[in-house]
Image (cartoon, rainbow, N blue to C red):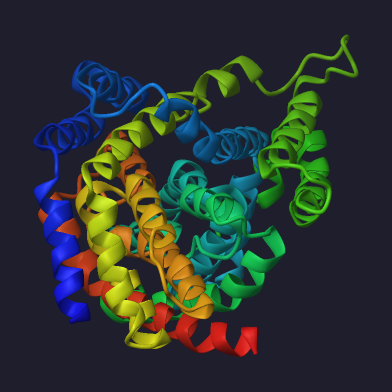
Length: 454
């Protein structure tokens, strides 16, 4: 009887689908990926949103509703990328990479492990997009110094790109997906961290194991690091470099205090960015010439993400208005009857499927709306579904190149460096790497969350 009801609900939803909403979504996604004539993601998503508004797929009343969901996540991402760019110009990441090369002590497997672990740390603090934009070219520069061959370089670069999304679970600020989900379900920074930090450790070590197993033959057994410059030589702005450690510690502390103080996370990230801008620009010493070009930093900040977020999510609301979330809610209600483990697994893999086909940013919102629309689901299973949705949209999105914005950025950076990975080659590697890590991470959530609730 219940199965018949779910099937009926799904059929009603599918019957009510608007061909226009689906066509506009895929047209917008195509433009975001293709970016014809150098148009950025903001112009592409904004054009799709205007088309959706003009055709009535979404209404003007949906605009403030969508903006209320995405503004905090969007401005947090912009602030963290500005912080990342300033630290990069100051030499922070190059300094870190040179230390890693020394800590590796000439052992290839140790260097590989350190790059993966430090990549996970960079992702946790500076977002997965920050890792793609900053850590990837830094690692590539270090590999050139070490004179690694193409096969060895591919192993390290693929590991860097994979870890950017696979380990972007621990904090709400580690991924745009996390912020949107936490804001939508009003999850505090502390509660989110309590659930996802232990789960992220499983993602880190399972990723490291799978990556090492897959690329073992390509990782050199040894390397010479005597030709590397000293880490201190990478520091271009000593003041910003020294103060960055204090700013980052205060930033992390501020995240935990944000909700008790009634502040959005973006305000904390914004204060961190403002502090580093003031230090880098020597605003307190007008007579001193700044080392870092702030105009370049602000020009390179991802301002188009603001338009992209509003535009893309408006297009997604068209799919909601067309009935997709009703169908998904019925499917999730069906899953909830199978217990927390299967509900967690099913939700995570469903989010993975959606992210792989339609990108994780619209997918997390569609799935969040669907979870919100379920009825009669037990509170603990519902909470597990919320976090499983995040895991599927963070980690599962690695399966295809269009799965996440950070993967698209990562591929764009590689292309600029004249290193090309075809979509077929990428999917073949990512399927093998992603699925076991995804399974173990979702399983750890299903085990850890009931214990935490108890």
